[in-house]
Image 1 (cartoon, rainbow, N blue to C red):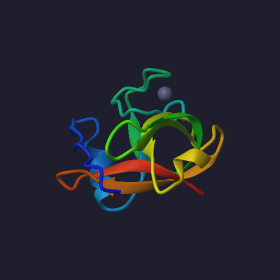
Image 2 (image 1 turned 45 degrees about the vertical axis):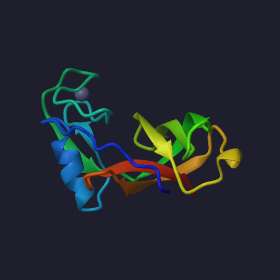
Image 3 (image 1 turned 180 degrees about the vertical axis):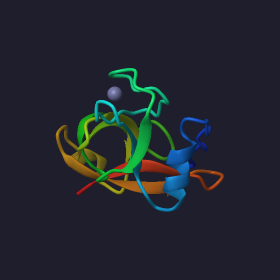
Image 4 (image 1 turned 180 degrees about the horizontal axis):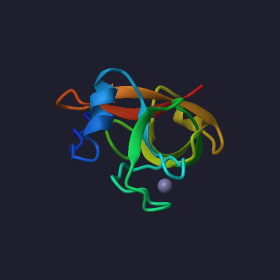
Length: 127
Ligand SMILES: [Zn+2]
């Protein structure tokens, strides 16, 4: 895929995610008080306001909640919401696939692609 990926802005709340991603690990924040995972990264749990959130390695598996294919550009791409096996839904891209064969509910797994400055960005491909 030749499409250039804008590098993500790394914040205090997302730094741990990208550090792990550089090591090839897909992690998500999990609240130690209520046990729920969430996305996007936040220091305070959005479910119970717990202040103890830790990063845990996730399965990298999910299903397509919805998607849209952008075709009127030089390098077509598919943007999607993917619901992770651990619960949260992530805004992402679908890659390494035939866009005409994508469907809602399809099983996908994470794959990292490097953005312009080399920071890996999580995307998903059909399994
Ligand atoms: Zn919580």
